[in-house]
Image 1 (cartoon, chains in turn red, brown):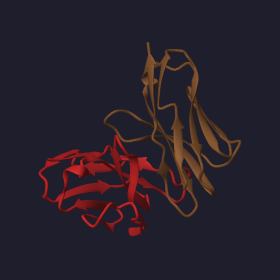
Image 2 (cartoon, helix red, strand yellow):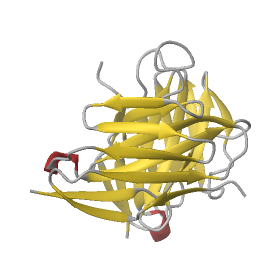
Image 3 (cartoon, helix red, strand yellow):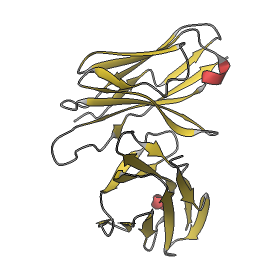
Image 4 (cartoon, helix red, strand yellow):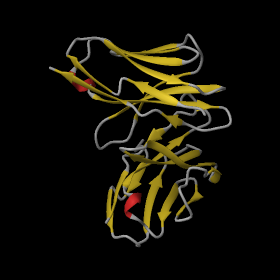
Length: 116
Length: 109
């Protein structure tokens, strides 16, 4: 299995620009999570989906952030407009609600976002 | 407020010097506690899941234990390749994962 795939791995953009981060979960997993990691705040859950439906988006910082999951194998996290304080590493994770590793979240390699 | 704390914040060990990392939580309705390892520039890597007090899990030089209010990650005879940040995450009913701040472990040869 290829694991969770994220793209791009690095993104540098200017303040005010739109940024789209992409995630492909592990095949067969039915839950997907977006996290943000910074030195100051550690790992923070932004939003999670179950069976492609957003369940909890209480961690989304503000309206500039939006996430979609149009199908079981793809999700996007969009920031529009981006601001320097959005600079962080964004992780996507997926899990399954059945089987041996039920509810264990497997993380992707992350996208390092820098907003200038 | 539900919280997850980890101690120490950083730990330096000599190779072969065993020690323990602590994860304390104040959540109610624990559904599971997870340990992850994170190397610089990488995503967290799953290590263990513990579901009930008294449970223990082992993998190579690592052993995780769980009580009603805390979990320990015991590292026996660590090697330099065990150097990483170790994160615990608490999953509780009605909410989702809450990660602790992590313990940065350095094992010196």
